[in-house]
Image 1 (cartoon, one colour):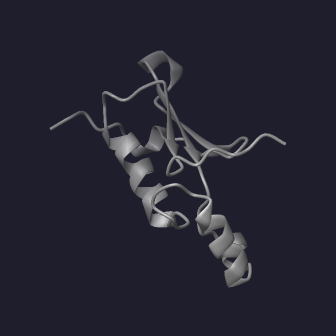
Image 2: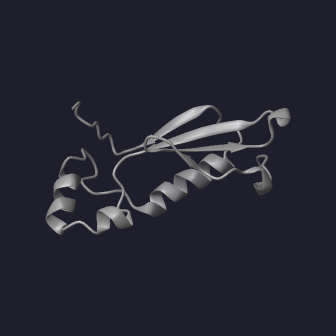
Length: 102
């Protein structure tokens, strides 16, 4: 069974520019750090939009043509915590969505 870090060292996610960042262990114990770059998820904010607006946003997503579910983001976060070999990575969870430049 892979080494599982103690939860007491898990710091809360820090949100920066649509990213949640995690780190485990104190600096003296070789910390692990990851970041999850998320796409469009069906959060309470997007859930409050009219259905036409939600469908329009989902149509821009290459595959699958839908908004992400919070449970999918949570599953990625748990995998990142449980995987002892993962370190120093930014994992994109955006269904290949690329935002157009302004």
